[in-house]
Length: 456
Ligand SMILES: *[C@@H]1O[C@H](CO)[C@@H](O)[C@H](O)[C@H]1NC(C)=O
Ligand SMILES: *[C@@H]1O[C@H](CO)[C@@H](O)[C@H](O)[C@H]1NC(C)=O
Ligand SMILES: [Zn+2]
Image (cartoon, rainbow, N blue to C red; front, side, top):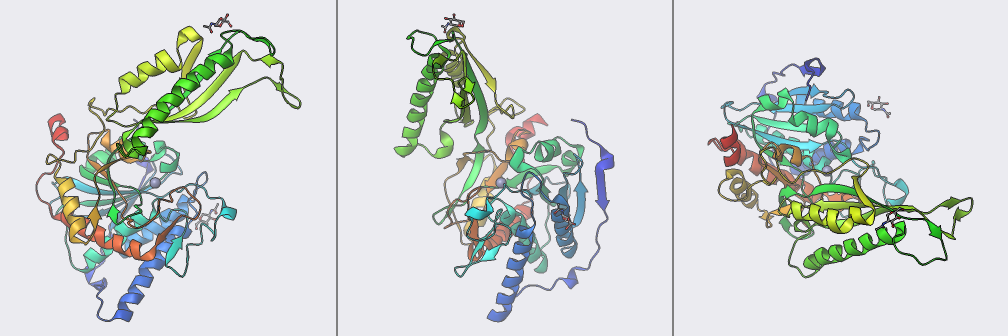
């Protein structure tokens, strides 16, 4: 991947004395209330920036994040691997810069919102009487980006000094696949020089009291199958029409879908552990001025499917199933990849399944569990993320990456109408990150994923 150094804007190190940062202490409840309201209003300011796709205002988010960095005396760089798509990279330098660093990753863009279906405007960040902050991005994932910053603010205020370098990354374009954001960044020289040892990225809200943590994710395979067959009169019964051929595939796909869904319904598997397959479109028929020609059986028919494959699944047998049952050439069927040509492999650059270890070979996992517990949180069983995140680009390099967004007692509303996060959960999440960052940044063993060490 080509990388153009001229695209880097270096904003010089800001040498602000740490003494200008007064520790936030709750000497009286009104004082802590006011500091809490300042924290919440900073979150609201970030939420109010319209970074919704397809035209995110990255100028404004970059200005905001850069000013946050300045107020925290963090080094700041804005990197444009693609013009107009800035990635903000902040650095909190550690005392042992030779140790692999910590990367606190988030994306700045959000999905669009249908304003009229929301109770409050999606970019107002209105707080209701129950403390719910309504905004696009309140869960996915401006919360996390700001919580990293607030946790660093607290830790700095207390005089904590990290051993490892801590990087905060605010990347563009995750919601449209991350190709001009995380993907190019992960392959860049800048990234290589960060010597990253562990990546934290987004997870999902949890309706119960347990926080959720993700060690892998399913790969999207966007499949289009096309059938051709002899055209004929609408009144004639004959074999091998395009429609009949396509319907045979659809029936087979539906049986497979039901078998996977049954495993979830029976409580045998979690959502991320099965192969999901859903029909995204059906395209067939011969158009007429008033709709479709009814007395004609068309010679072509097509259907598109969104398939999600966990790294634990047998991808080869799925491919065989596609070739033999869902789109067999002998039935005049062909298969192609959809719109974004997605077929993300389930193995990494070294041919190993794209998973972050959750056993003792990965010390970061135990550190995370302990840190969450010490901050008074409960962590659920590690899960496979059902959809895609930018974490895959880092896992593909063999790096450990954990998906984690501290939102307990919160319905999963990412990409939904009325996305919200309660302000108390948000504040609790900051404490969780204080504990995690402190623990990760104090850990002074090498801490590389075993298999990554082998490959170096
Ligand atoms: C984006 O934000 C900048 C800086 O705040 C502002 O000047 C500009 O008008 C915004 N662009 C759009 C399209 O709203
Ligand atoms: C394949 O398509 C050809 C041409 O339309 C048709 O004659 C033949 O019967 C089809 N075969 C099958 C198995 O659908
Ligand atoms: Zn997200």
